[in-house]
Length: 179
Ligand SMILES: [Fe+2]
Image (cartoon, rainbow, N blue to C red; front, side, top):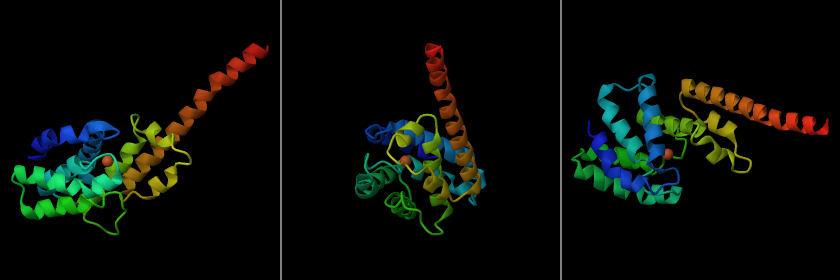
């Protein structure tokens, strides 16, 4: 599959993003683990993983991802001899990948869901949670696939539970010093 070669070409670009190339690798991992849940046969695998590799190729901001992303993606895909139909498909989704499209192709759904589920990961949760009034519920509502939505709900419940536990020792210490 060509997506592995694509990943090597993409890494220098991805390294400049806020969460680095590691973010892309995490999204790729989620997409691989959940591939079988989507209505896609094996022939789509390389296209899906290539789309995942390239989704944030444009830079750290949405504007850069939408404007520069498809241009860089096209260049890399052409270099590796991808079919022009696939290049158009991939580039078209790169420039809209933050939007929740109405009934899109399954290859978009798997990218979108994986790119959302990664926000609940150990490595990325605080990055979003530290933003004032970050709306986790709207992220949960936006999933296409119910299984990934349920996984996200479980992860947020665990996070809330752990946060509550984190506060316990602090309260305990205060009690001790008061006594
Ligand atoms: Fe992403």
